[in-house]
Length: 106
Image 1: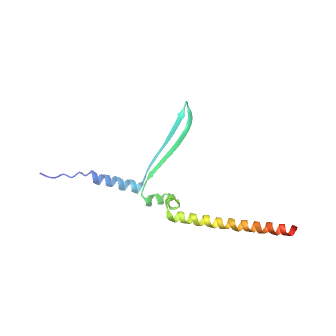
Image 2: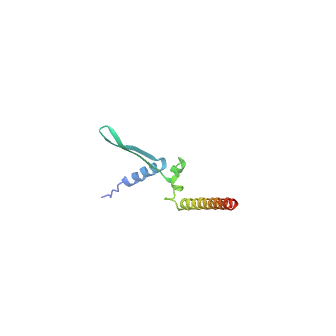
Image 3: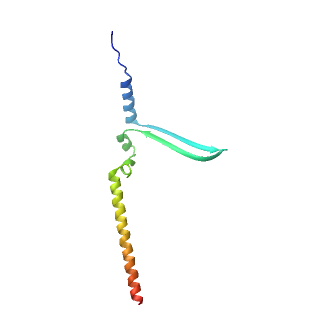
């Protein structure tokens, strides 16, 4: 009596490898309407691909999204700190200028 092993697992692996290598795009729209009046449209786009394939086609948004990447969050924080310092400097300059004008009018 021979033991048979299912070959489905290897074919699933092959399909997954092909999908990740080539990528798959699934697109669809959900529209909600009442009496021929469109109330809501939701566009759904799903791309399944490997990280390398996504980068190859120009999809690398996760690298700059501060919610997904700690380095992007750090850069975002530094940019905000720099802008904040610039604004504080500007306010100080304006206050000094106003003080000089006030003193000059006396």
